[in-house]
Image (cartoon, rainbow, N blue to C red; front, side):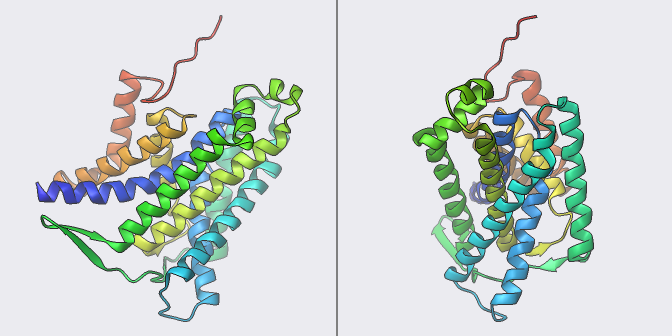
Length: 300
């Protein structure tokens, strides 16, 4: 039983990172009905920005909470700017083009970031600096929780709840939901649709950047292709939860993390990537709209 509870703790911490990335997918899809396949690579950029900023600004061996939060804010800002540029330069000119064109463009932007990352950062792995000194916390019953896990979970939950508050409790969030429901109607009501769409990309990219920094704390090895598989799994999490649904993306991310850790612990690490797609197939067979999604009726 203790081993199971330990795996659950590890799965929740890991799943919260998937949830942060999945929120970016679900926000963009909710507003534009577009799958931004470059989103996983934005997560990679967040980790790289924090890595190079730490090397440039911090002395070797420096580990402190203020340094971590400063780098977290810097990475989120850089990824938010990158998300804005991606939307402005790659997607906005294709706004009235067929959806298939935008989908191909999303794949192209993803490949550009991956190969550009290898060219700019180098293909060799980097080792993320230890910004927080890891300490074990034992609440009893043989379960071990580290302060890094608690930090990851705390920051992730804070960002997710902050997004939930922004979307459902503020005027900006009301405008975002109006654009999601009908961009044309929102425009007639005086809402700046282009600005809201740009904000969606900025917010989603900032969350992905935060996930990149948090992953660096728990898994220090980072490289330019690190966003491929987590990006796919986060997309699966968004679909499983009900893509376009923010609580669904959170739940889907936690489900992905728990499933992955339990499979590694009780079956084999060979299947840690496969389990995400098994869950996707099962959920789509049982509930095609996702766990929290709603079916849309279309007249034909």
